[in-house]
Length: 209
Image 1 (spheres, rainbow, N blue to C red):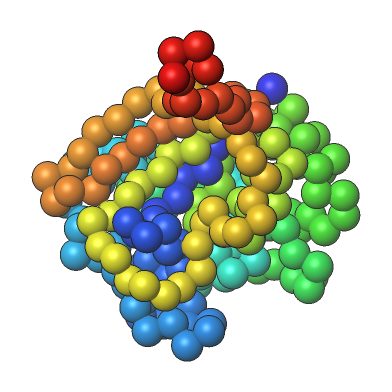
Image 2: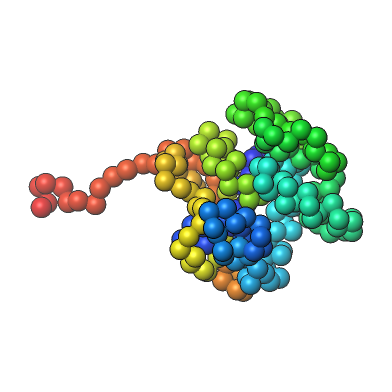
C-alpha cells in the first residue's frame, strides 16, 4: 500500500495561500502571492527533486491541478525531474466540476473521498503525493489519511491569507522524522502521523506545592 504524503509551503504565521506567484490565488483580496520565490536556492531544489524521486502518483485539488496543468505539460524535457513525473504518472484530481480533463493521465474523483483515496493508496506503488491543494489536504488530515507531511516554513510573515492549519482542525499528533534548513533559511521538517495529542500538566503535585 502506498503512503500518502503532503508537501506544503507555509509562512511563519501559517499562511499557505499562493506561494508560487502574484496571480496564483487572489481570493479574499490576497496581495502577497509569490512569497516563496525569493527563497529558491540549490538546497530547496535538491529537496524538491528528492520528493519527486519517490512519487508513484499525484493527488491534487482542483485549483492546484489547474495551475499545474497550465504549466507542466509545456515543459517537455524528459530529464526534468518534476515535469517528467507529472506528465507521465497518474494524476487524481478531487473535483465535482471538472468533467473532461485535458492533461493526459488524469482521473477525476468526486465521490466518497475517504473510500476513493484509500483505494488509490492501495494500488499505488511509491508515494501518493499531494502538493499544495490546501482544501483537499485539510479534508484528508481530518480523515487521518495523510501519513507524512513535509512542511516547508519560509522566514516571512504576511499577516493575511488562508492558513493550512486553520481554526477547527482535528487535533492531531505527529512524530518528527527529519529536518534541514536551506541556505536561505527555509526550515524543512518531515512529520509522520502519530494519532491524537496527549495532554499533561507542569503544575507541581499538591504535596510539593
